[in-house]
Amino acid sequence: MSRASDPVKRIDMALHVQQLCAENGITVTYQSLDDPSPRYYAQPMRKLICIRPTKNTGYYVSALHELGHILGDRQAPSISTLTKELYAWIWARQKALVWTETAERVMRNAMNSYGWTNRQKEIWERKFPNVA
Image (tube, rainbow, N blue to C red; front, side, top):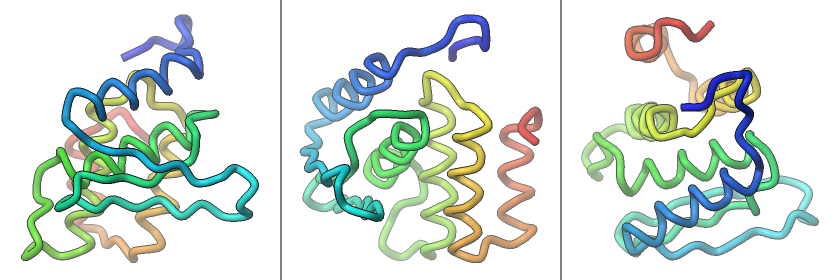
């Protein structure tokens, strides 16, 4: 993971996503940046993700999150959506070249939209105790 004094460039983030996809046989489709709102998704059975081009940290961690739905833990169909979402974010956080305040905000906004509870927040805090 990068230190604050050693910033990760946008191209490094984009290449990281491409590398993970290539190494794991995952197909990527890209949503246009002209679309007013992002529509990220993963189709684990097809090994397919749809993301926006990796132009900033928020888009980068969102792409990693979608990869987490394919490559991460606790993604079986029998697992609750909330648990799958949390563990896809955990995977993203563990694999990220950089995790910034923006990344944390993107994750928390996404988890808030799923109605995460104190139980899921405690799991996150145990895994990443230095994150506010």
